[in-house]
Length: 377
Image 1 (cartoon, rainbow, N blue to C red):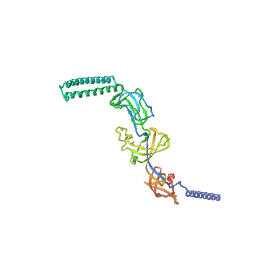
Image 2 (cartoon, rainbow, N blue to C red):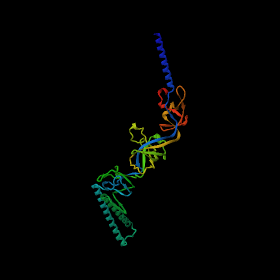
Image 3 (cartoon, rainbow, N blue to C red):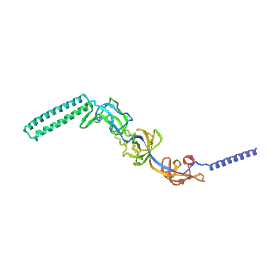
Image 4 (cartoon, rainbow, N blue to C red):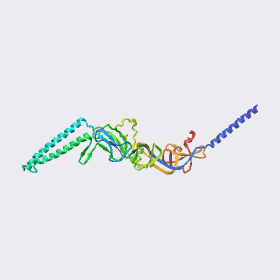
Protein backbone atom coordinates (compact mmCIF):
# COMPACT_ATOMS: atom_id res chain seq x y z
CA UNK A 1 0.00 0.00 0.00
CA UNK A 2 2.80 2.38 0.97
CA UNK A 3 4.69 1.32 -2.14
CA UNK A 4 1.72 2.19 -4.40
CA UNK A 5 1.41 5.57 -2.71
CA UNK A 6 5.07 6.39 -3.34
CA UNK A 7 4.78 5.37 -6.99
CA UNK A 8 1.73 7.67 -7.43
CA UNK A 9 3.59 10.66 -5.94
CA UNK A 10 6.58 10.06 -8.17
CA UNK A 11 4.33 9.95 -11.23
CA UNK A 12 2.67 13.25 -10.38
CA UNK A 13 6.07 14.92 -9.82
CA UNK A 14 7.39 13.60 -13.15
CA UNK A 15 4.29 14.72 -15.03
CA UNK A 16 4.39 18.20 -13.46
CA UNK A 17 8.04 18.57 -14.37
CA UNK A 18 7.29 17.61 -17.96
CA UNK A 19 4.52 20.17 -18.25
CA UNK A 20 6.80 22.87 -16.78
CA UNK A 21 9.56 22.07 -19.27
CA UNK A 22 7.07 22.13 -22.16
CA UNK A 23 5.63 25.47 -21.15
CA UNK A 24 9.09 26.97 -20.73
CA UNK A 25 10.26 25.66 -24.06
CA UNK A 26 7.10 26.97 -25.74
CA UNK A 27 7.74 30.47 -24.31
CA UNK A 28 11.24 30.50 -25.70
CA UNK A 29 9.94 29.71 -29.16
CA UNK A 30 7.35 32.52 -29.23
CA UNK A 31 7.16 34.25 -32.58
CA UNK A 32 6.32 37.95 -33.13
CA UNK A 33 4.47 39.53 -36.05
CA UNK A 34 7.07 41.39 -38.11
CA UNK A 35 7.36 43.64 -41.13
CA UNK A 36 10.27 44.95 -43.16
CA UNK A 37 11.60 48.45 -43.74
CA UNK A 38 10.96 49.31 -47.39
CA UNK A 39 11.49 52.24 -49.73
CA UNK A 40 8.50 54.24 -50.87
CA UNK A 41 7.00 57.67 -51.46
CA UNK A 42 5.35 59.70 -48.72
CA UNK A 43 3.03 62.57 -49.63
CA UNK A 44 1.36 65.03 -47.31
CA UNK A 45 -1.84 66.27 -48.92
CA UNK A 46 -4.55 68.83 -48.33
CA UNK A 47 -8.08 67.76 -49.23
CA UNK A 48 -10.62 70.24 -50.59
CA UNK A 49 -14.29 69.48 -51.21
CA UNK A 50 -16.26 71.47 -53.77
CA UNK A 51 -17.66 71.30 -57.29
CA UNK A 52 -16.91 71.83 -60.95
CA UNK A 53 -18.09 75.23 -62.25
CA UNK A 54 -17.47 77.44 -65.29
CA UNK A 55 -14.68 79.98 -64.87
CA UNK A 56 -16.88 82.68 -66.45
CA UNK A 57 -20.63 82.72 -65.80
CA UNK A 58 -23.03 85.68 -65.92
CA UNK A 59 -26.64 86.39 -65.01
CA UNK A 60 -28.88 87.92 -67.65
CA UNK A 61 -31.13 90.73 -66.38
CA UNK A 62 -33.27 93.30 -68.13
CA UNK A 63 -32.49 97.04 -68.21
CA UNK A 64 -36.23 97.80 -68.55
CA UNK A 65 -39.24 96.57 -66.67
CA UNK A 66 -41.99 94.73 -68.44
CA UNK A 67 -43.31 91.30 -69.33
CA UNK A 68 -41.42 88.48 -70.97
CA UNK A 69 -42.68 88.53 -74.56
CA UNK A 70 -40.57 85.92 -76.30
CA UNK A 71 -37.76 83.53 -75.35
CA UNK A 72 -35.47 82.61 -78.23
CA UNK A 73 -33.13 80.04 -76.60
CA UNK A 74 -33.38 76.85 -74.59
CA UNK A 75 -31.39 75.47 -71.65
CA UNK A 76 -28.22 73.79 -72.86
CA UNK A 77 -28.14 75.70 -76.14
CA UNK A 78 -24.87 77.28 -77.28
CA UNK A 79 -25.20 80.97 -78.16
CA UNK A 80 -22.93 83.55 -79.74
CA UNK A 81 -22.29 87.07 -78.55
CA UNK A 82 -25.01 89.39 -79.89
CA UNK A 83 -27.56 86.61 -80.40
CA UNK A 84 -31.13 87.44 -79.23
CA UNK A 85 -32.06 85.76 -75.97
CA UNK A 86 -35.31 87.31 -74.71
CA UNK A 87 -37.69 90.02 -75.80
CA UNK A 88 -39.20 92.11 -73.03
CA UNK A 89 -42.50 93.77 -73.78
CA UNK A 90 -42.94 97.05 -71.86
CA UNK A 91 -45.85 97.07 -69.48
CA UNK A 92 -46.30 100.75 -68.55
CA UNK A 93 -48.92 101.87 -66.11
CA UNK A 94 -51.65 104.25 -67.34
CA UNK A 95 -50.00 107.00 -65.30
CA UNK A 96 -46.63 106.44 -67.03
CA UNK A 97 -48.27 106.57 -70.48
CA UNK A 98 -50.20 109.73 -69.59
CA UNK A 99 -47.08 111.42 -68.21
CA UNK A 100 -44.99 110.53 -71.27
CA UNK A 101 -47.69 111.75 -73.69
CA UNK A 102 -48.15 114.98 -71.76
CA UNK A 103 -44.41 115.64 -71.68
CA UNK A 104 -44.23 115.17 -75.45
CA UNK A 105 -47.11 117.58 -76.09
CA UNK A 106 -45.57 120.18 -73.76
CA UNK A 107 -42.25 119.93 -75.57
CA UNK A 108 -43.95 120.25 -78.95
CA UNK A 109 -45.76 123.39 -77.75
CA UNK A 110 -42.48 124.90 -76.54
CA UNK A 111 -40.93 124.10 -79.91
CA UNK A 112 -43.74 125.89 -81.74
CA UNK A 113 -43.31 128.93 -79.53
CA UNK A 114 -39.55 128.97 -80.10
CA UNK A 115 -40.00 128.66 -83.86
CA UNK A 116 -42.48 131.54 -83.93
CA UNK A 117 -40.15 133.77 -81.96
CA UNK A 118 -37.30 132.95 -84.32
CA UNK A 119 -39.52 133.62 -87.36
CA UNK A 120 -40.34 137.09 -86.02
CA UNK A 121 -36.68 137.89 -85.51
CA UNK A 122 -35.84 136.51 -88.97
CA UNK A 123 -38.31 139.07 -90.41
CA UNK A 124 -36.62 141.90 -88.53
CA UNK A 125 -33.23 140.63 -89.69
CA UNK A 126 -34.37 140.59 -93.34
CA UNK A 127 -35.57 144.22 -93.00
CA UNK A 128 -32.22 145.26 -91.56
CA UNK A 129 -33.74 146.25 -88.27
CA UNK A 130 -31.40 143.95 -86.27
CA UNK A 131 -27.95 142.59 -87.07
CA UNK A 132 -27.27 138.83 -87.39
CA UNK A 133 -25.34 138.86 -84.11
CA UNK A 134 -28.17 140.42 -82.17
CA UNK A 135 -28.25 138.66 -78.74
CA UNK A 136 -31.96 137.93 -78.76
CA UNK A 137 -31.71 136.53 -82.27
CA UNK A 138 -28.80 134.22 -81.32
CA UNK A 139 -30.71 133.05 -78.23
CA UNK A 140 -33.83 132.36 -80.27
CA UNK A 141 -31.93 130.14 -82.68
CA UNK A 142 -30.44 128.25 -79.72
CA UNK A 143 -33.86 127.82 -78.13
CA UNK A 144 -35.24 126.23 -81.31
CA UNK A 145 -32.41 123.70 -81.41
CA UNK A 146 -32.89 122.88 -77.73
CA UNK A 147 -36.66 122.52 -78.16
CA UNK A 148 -36.13 120.20 -81.15
CA UNK A 149 -33.82 117.99 -79.08
CA UNK A 150 -36.32 117.92 -76.21
CA UNK A 151 -39.17 116.90 -78.51
CA UNK A 152 -37.03 114.12 -79.99
CA UNK A 153 -36.09 112.84 -76.54
CA UNK A 154 -39.71 112.88 -75.31
CA UNK A 155 -40.88 111.11 -78.49
CA UNK A 156 -38.24 108.40 -78.11
CA UNK A 157 -39.16 107.98 -74.47
CA UNK A 158 -42.83 107.48 -75.40
CA UNK A 159 -41.86 104.95 -78.09
CA UNK A 160 -39.78 102.98 -75.60
CA UNK A 161 -42.62 102.94 -73.09
CA UNK A 162 -45.14 101.84 -75.70
CA UNK A 163 -43.18 99.34 -77.81
CA UNK A 164 -39.74 98.94 -76.30
CA UNK A 165 -38.18 100.11 -79.58
CA UNK A 166 -36.61 103.46 -80.51
CA UNK A 167 -34.05 104.89 -82.94
CA UNK A 168 -31.52 107.32 -81.52
CA UNK A 169 -29.25 108.64 -84.23
CA UNK A 170 -27.91 105.58 -86.02
CA UNK A 171 -28.40 103.35 -82.98
CA UNK A 172 -31.46 101.18 -82.65
CA UNK A 173 -32.63 100.77 -79.06
CA UNK A 174 -34.56 97.60 -78.42
CA UNK A 175 -36.06 95.68 -75.54
CA UNK A 176 -34.63 92.46 -76.97
CA UNK A 177 -31.82 91.28 -74.69
CA UNK A 178 -28.75 90.04 -76.58
CA UNK A 179 -26.11 87.56 -75.42
CA UNK A 180 -23.15 89.51 -74.00
CA UNK A 181 -20.74 86.56 -74.40
CA UNK A 182 -20.31 83.29 -76.26
CA UNK A 183 -21.51 80.49 -74.05
CA UNK A 184 -24.09 77.93 -73.03
CA UNK A 185 -27.48 78.60 -71.46
CA UNK A 186 -27.16 77.07 -67.98
CA UNK A 187 -30.71 77.74 -66.80
CA UNK A 188 -33.84 79.75 -67.50
CA UNK A 189 -35.77 81.26 -64.62
CA UNK A 190 -38.71 82.94 -66.33
CA UNK A 191 -41.51 81.97 -68.68
CA UNK A 192 -43.35 83.93 -71.34
CA UNK A 193 -45.85 86.29 -69.71
CA UNK A 194 -44.00 86.72 -66.42
CA UNK A 195 -43.36 90.27 -65.19
CA UNK A 196 -39.74 91.18 -64.51
CA UNK A 197 -37.99 93.85 -62.48
CA UNK A 198 -35.29 95.87 -64.25
CA UNK A 199 -31.75 96.67 -63.18
CA UNK A 200 -32.81 100.32 -62.91
CA UNK A 201 -35.29 99.51 -60.14
CA UNK A 202 -34.56 100.01 -56.46
CA UNK A 203 -35.57 96.38 -55.96
CA UNK A 204 -33.45 93.35 -56.84
CA UNK A 205 -33.57 92.78 -60.59
CA UNK A 206 -35.11 89.58 -61.92
CA UNK A 207 -32.59 87.01 -63.13
CA UNK A 208 -33.85 85.81 -66.49
CA UNK A 209 -31.21 83.18 -67.25
CA UNK A 210 -27.49 82.55 -66.87
CA UNK A 211 -24.79 81.95 -69.46
CA UNK A 212 -21.38 80.36 -69.05
CA UNK A 213 -18.39 79.38 -71.12
CA UNK A 214 -18.41 75.60 -70.66
CA UNK A 215 -15.13 75.28 -72.52
CA UNK A 216 -13.34 76.75 -69.50
CA UNK A 217 -14.12 74.83 -66.32
CA UNK A 218 -12.54 75.16 -62.89
CA UNK A 219 -12.85 73.55 -59.46
CA UNK A 220 -14.10 75.65 -56.55
CA UNK A 221 -13.89 74.33 -53.01
CA UNK A 222 -12.55 75.08 -49.55
CA UNK A 223 -9.78 73.87 -47.26
CA UNK A 224 -9.11 74.23 -43.53
CA UNK A 225 -7.07 77.11 -42.20
CA UNK A 226 -4.18 74.74 -41.39
CA UNK A 227 -3.98 73.61 -45.01
CA UNK A 228 -4.57 77.12 -46.37
CA UNK A 229 -1.47 78.33 -44.54
CA UNK A 230 0.65 75.93 -46.62
CA UNK A 231 -0.91 76.53 -50.03
CA UNK A 232 0.51 78.68 -52.80
CA UNK A 233 -0.66 79.20 -56.37
CA UNK A 234 0.95 76.85 -58.87
CA UNK A 235 0.80 73.68 -56.76
CA UNK A 236 -0.23 70.52 -58.68
CA UNK A 237 -3.69 69.16 -57.92
CA UNK A 238 -5.47 65.88 -58.61
CA UNK A 239 -9.28 66.06 -58.90
CA UNK A 240 -11.78 63.27 -58.54
CA UNK A 241 -15.35 63.82 -59.78
CA UNK A 242 -18.34 62.01 -58.27
CA UNK A 243 -19.81 60.64 -61.55
CA UNK A 244 -16.38 59.27 -62.58
CA UNK A 245 -14.86 57.80 -59.38
CA UNK A 246 -12.01 56.06 -61.23
CA UNK A 247 -10.99 59.17 -63.17
CA UNK A 248 -8.19 61.47 -62.01
CA UNK A 249 -8.04 64.96 -63.53
CA UNK A 250 -4.86 66.97 -63.20
CA UNK A 251 -4.98 70.69 -62.53
CA UNK A 252 -3.10 73.61 -61.01
CA UNK A 253 -3.98 75.60 -57.91
CA UNK A 254 -4.75 79.09 -59.20
CA UNK A 255 -6.28 80.90 -56.22
CA UNK A 256 -6.29 80.74 -52.42
CA UNK A 257 -8.64 83.10 -50.58
CA UNK A 258 -7.03 85.85 -48.50
CA UNK A 259 -9.72 85.56 -45.85
CA UNK A 260 -12.32 83.05 -44.78
CA UNK A 261 -15.77 84.19 -45.89
CA UNK A 262 -17.47 82.03 -43.27
CA UNK A 263 -15.32 83.25 -40.41
CA UNK A 264 -15.74 86.92 -41.34
CA UNK A 265 -19.43 86.82 -42.23
CA UNK A 266 -21.19 89.58 -40.25
CA UNK A 267 -24.42 87.60 -40.06
CA UNK A 268 -22.83 84.41 -38.75
CA UNK A 269 -24.93 84.27 -35.59
CA UNK A 270 -24.59 80.53 -34.94
CA UNK A 271 -21.58 80.42 -32.60
CA UNK A 272 -21.72 76.62 -32.50
CA UNK A 273 -20.28 76.64 -36.03
CA UNK A 274 -17.60 79.27 -35.43
CA UNK A 275 -14.90 76.63 -36.05
CA UNK A 276 -16.05 76.28 -39.66
CA UNK A 277 -13.62 78.71 -41.27
CA UNK A 278 -12.87 77.17 -44.63
CA UNK A 279 -10.82 79.13 -47.15
CA UNK A 280 -11.99 79.08 -50.76
CA UNK A 281 -9.62 77.81 -53.42
CA UNK A 282 -9.78 77.52 -57.20
CA UNK A 283 -8.12 74.96 -59.45
CA UNK A 284 -7.69 75.68 -63.16
CA UNK A 285 -5.87 74.34 -66.22
CA UNK A 286 -7.86 71.11 -65.93
CA UNK A 287 -6.66 68.29 -68.19
CA UNK A 288 -10.04 66.77 -69.07
CA UNK A 289 -10.03 63.71 -71.36
CA UNK A 290 -11.83 64.26 -74.66
CA UNK A 291 -14.33 61.48 -74.02
CA UNK A 292 -15.38 62.89 -70.62
CA UNK A 293 -18.17 65.48 -70.35
CA UNK A 294 -18.17 67.54 -67.17
CA UNK A 295 -21.26 69.50 -66.20
CA UNK A 296 -21.54 72.56 -64.02
CA UNK A 297 -22.21 71.54 -60.42
CA UNK A 298 -20.59 68.07 -60.45
CA UNK A 299 -19.37 67.27 -56.91
CA UNK A 300 -15.63 66.98 -56.75
CA UNK A 301 -12.72 66.68 -54.33
CA UNK A 302 -9.18 67.93 -54.80
CA UNK A 303 -5.94 66.48 -53.46
CA UNK A 304 -3.18 69.07 -53.21
CA UNK A 305 0.34 67.82 -52.58
CA UNK A 306 1.91 69.92 -49.82
CA UNK A 307 5.15 67.94 -49.39
CA UNK A 308 6.58 64.85 -51.04
CA UNK A 309 9.45 62.49 -50.16
CA UNK A 310 10.40 59.95 -52.85
CA UNK A 311 12.46 56.75 -52.54
CA UNK A 312 12.85 57.00 -48.76
CA UNK A 313 12.79 54.38 -46.00
CA UNK A 314 9.25 53.92 -44.74
CA UNK A 315 7.36 52.07 -42.04
CA UNK A 316 3.67 51.87 -41.13
CA UNK A 317 3.01 54.23 -38.22
CA UNK A 318 1.31 51.39 -36.35
CA UNK A 319 4.69 49.68 -35.94
CA UNK A 320 6.07 52.49 -33.79
CA UNK A 321 6.24 52.48 -30.01
CA UNK A 322 6.43 55.85 -28.30
CA UNK A 323 8.13 56.60 -24.99
CA UNK A 324 6.66 60.00 -24.29
CA UNK A 325 7.31 61.86 -27.55
CA UNK A 326 10.27 59.68 -28.56
CA UNK A 327 9.53 57.17 -31.35
CA UNK A 328 11.02 53.69 -31.19
CA UNK A 329 10.87 50.42 -33.12
CA UNK A 330 11.11 46.93 -31.66
CA UNK A 331 14.02 44.76 -32.88
CA UNK A 332 13.99 41.01 -32.20
CA UNK A 333 16.91 39.61 -30.11
CA UNK A 334 17.83 36.67 -27.84
CA UNK A 335 16.83 38.33 -24.57
CA UNK A 336 14.16 36.90 -22.27
CA UNK A 337 11.70 39.45 -23.63
CA UNK A 338 12.65 38.55 -27.19
CA UNK A 339 13.20 42.10 -28.46
CA UNK A 340 14.63 45.51 -27.59
CA UNK A 341 13.68 49.09 -28.39
CA UNK A 342 15.57 51.07 -31.01
CA UNK A 343 15.19 54.86 -31.17
CA UNK A 344 14.40 56.22 -34.63
CA UNK A 345 14.21 59.69 -36.22
CA UNK A 346 11.08 60.29 -38.30
CA UNK A 347 10.45 62.49 -41.32
CA UNK A 348 7.32 63.11 -43.39
CA UNK A 349 4.09 61.25 -42.60
CA UNK A 350 0.87 60.78 -44.56
CA UNK A 351 -1.05 59.48 -41.55
CA UNK A 352 -0.54 55.81 -42.49
CA UNK A 353 3.12 55.44 -43.38
CA UNK A 354 6.05 57.47 -42.10
CA UNK A 355 9.51 58.29 -43.41
CA UNK A 356 12.36 56.99 -41.19
CA UNK A 357 15.49 59.14 -41.34
CA UNK A 358 17.68 57.33 -38.80
CA UNK A 359 17.66 54.16 -36.72
CA UNK A 360 16.84 51.40 -39.24
CA UNK A 361 18.13 50.12 -42.57
CA UNK A 362 16.51 48.86 -45.75
CA UNK A 363 14.81 45.43 -45.43
CA UNK A 364 15.49 45.32 -41.67
CA UNK A 365 12.90 43.22 -39.85
CA UNK A 366 10.80 45.13 -37.34
CA UNK A 367 8.29 43.78 -34.86
CA UNK A 368 4.77 45.10 -35.50
CA UNK A 369 4.05 46.83 -32.18
CA UNK A 370 0.33 47.10 -32.96
CA UNK A 371 0.03 43.29 -32.99
CA UNK A 372 1.70 42.67 -29.61
CA UNK A 373 -0.38 41.77 -26.56
CA UNK A 374 -0.51 43.84 -23.40
CA UNK A 375 2.14 41.70 -21.73
CA UNK A 376 4.67 43.04 -24.21
CA UNK A 377 3.58 46.63 -23.99
